[in-house]
Image (cartoon, rainbow, N blue to C red; front, side, top):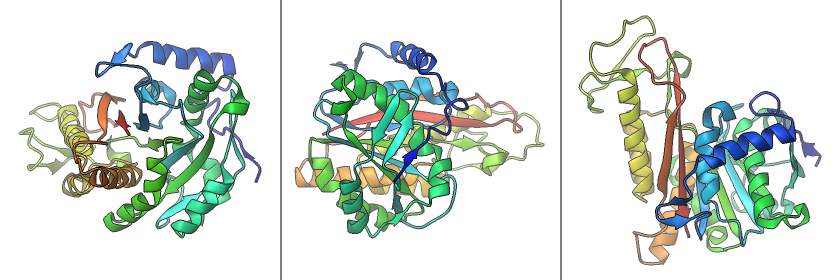
Length: 323
């Protein structure tokens, strides 16, 4: 029940609070004053998708999601991310009492965590793996800054509910989505869904390419291949991500699952996104309005515009859903 240290501080983002504050302020200053004709934060935007790479790569994209996040009524924030450090089936919950950031600590809601664990028959995250896992940690400094803006005093900050998602099939994503549905309905809960999008290159075992800019005609390159004679590789990556983003915006969990099955796009947070989509779809069905509670994609960035097969790229997406 100790405090989880900010292990990536000084590596993936600044450890010095002043330097980190200046960096995040710089990213946030690049976000327009309004998004989709709404002032910021967007009223009711209690669910966001945001990336989790080093801030040098994903910080600017993440600023769009955090600018939209409405914490005005929040008592707790669910932070749901994929496991990068070990393989397991289903979901797991945090062992820690607090998560440290360079700004200060965020308190884990142990009661809610235990209820979620029991309802979903989840396991505890292995301590050493939770210590190494970045998909949850990378959101904590941004969240702390948003809480400071919304609440001022740390004593008034919402608690956090960190959940790590392992390998989950389509049916299990729907089942976990149903567990989260009552929390989604409660305006005192907000949700951060942690995910990067396409990971392209040899190190990710994903090097697909279409000379026709047609995702039904994908071939696999080798890192030793020359530059393709057709469209640049980054055009294929863009098409892959655009189709995945369209599936996310469709509001249909199955559309997203089937899209990734078709393209094998390496969206690392596919299972957290799938769970969130399943829950949002249930909410829309209860409202008898399937046009509601959909994600809106608002930012798309890539770490590199790949030209050569030996290069690598990771894509980043920010989105929000109004409840």
